[in-house]
Image (cartoon, rainbow, N blue to C red; front, side, top):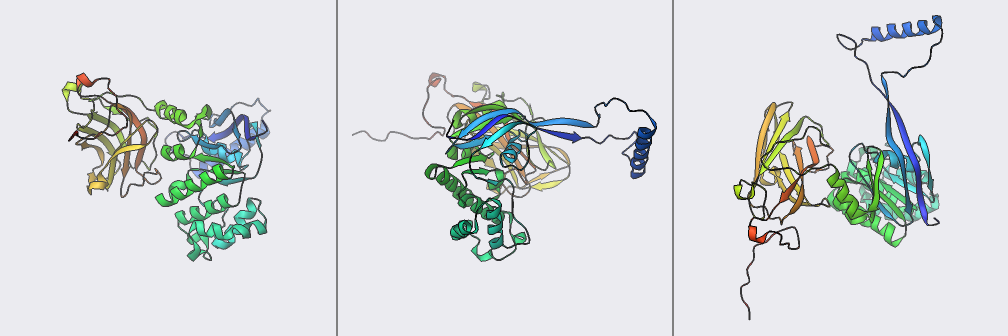
Length: 431
């Protein structure tokens, strides 16, 4: 179609993964490697050629497998999926950073990409010099860059450090300047990966506002990858969902997010231990959630959560070393990924001392102000803070399981009210 700016047809990308074989009794030494290499060369010279057989230490990995979709001019498209789903690989192919193994892509217009912190920047050059360098990489003329220069600097808020080498910039300053260049140099297609998570909340809001302006008011196309479903929902009109390199769906944002959330969470039952060993997670792994259990402590509703009632969580945490942890959080999301409740130890100034091995931490919400519905449970573990970006956390599980909040009074069963949050109120007077 004439208004299509991106067309992806049967796109696949294959990588070869090498696995080091362990020698009996331990790993190979340098002497073993040299000796084996010499034997391999001599055997090839002295023995007749044999048929090629697959190397048992090499494995094919398809980061993308037969992906096809089409994006029209002015669309705001979210790319969502778990870690390893193929999102970043897709963006690198669309940005012409890497070539596909199979399939083809068609792109109309200039592409500006922000895939990693400091993409297209030289650390020894100043902020001023990197604006011109990055602009040139994006295909802009010197006149165009000069015309937009003041807007870029004002947006990035780095005037004071404009003539400082960017190697001295913080990661947040890097991203502010890089996003400022990418967004202001008038690309037809703007591609943004998860890098915005590095910036502070105000800058993230500014970036989302700029992307909305670029797409809605200027008719440009935006592709946005994020694990923040709230940001995806606010910015994007449609979503592409990937899973293990395959396209699961390409549809409107609300239905795609709901499918994404429900695809890797399962509804659980109170008072049962839920194994977390195989769930999708981020973090260093020095300490991690191994299992969880929850209960409202009320047998009348079979210990299920209910509005305004208590909800107690038992968290099994395994730690490699003894450590003091400043943030342990249980988050409750709605079906579109918006956090409704966040019970975080950092908010009450409570540090938790973890011993080496198995620990069980109990967190109780005294009053759960949520209406009956199905909700998603997330977990967070951090030594010092609670940025919840997943980059520096010990452990971050976006979706541990689903829980059902039920109606406590049987005579009210089936009655629905608008909104997620409950409130206590009375009718005081009728005139």
